[in-house]
Image (cartoon, rainbow, N blue to C red; front, top):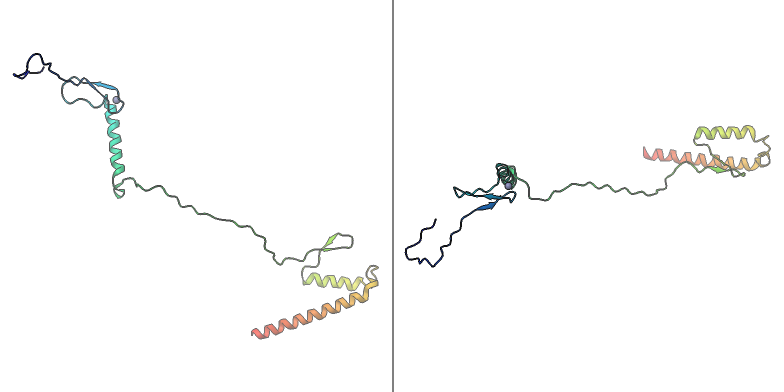
Length: 165
Ligand SMILES: [Zn+2]
């Protein structure tokens, strides 16, 4: 119902707009309006609650971080990177296995006890061993050179020990 102002002429149409419905602010469904009171913003209580939950959650997220808010910084990870490098390093190891005339490998004595046992075996068997007896002089000279080198090395070690005291 519109009141016409007194100076309006009947020929001029009066224009009046009346809200009939509006879209639900959550789902967009049309919500009828009866004309009484404030127009409804939602089609249902459920959609009003969902909209309120979203607003209040956003408010909590936007609060300062020390007040429980969400940090605006990007998520960072600490990654420990371990790089493994494989390289070959020559190290002093056991002597390479010797090779017999037949081509078969054999090992040398590995410690002093085994060397002493090997030399004792040489002493016992060389005089009658058919493979060694032709070379007794060569074996004897090799043993003498070996004995000389061992004594010289031992003397040098003793001098080192005295120098360190
Ligand atoms: Zn709705």
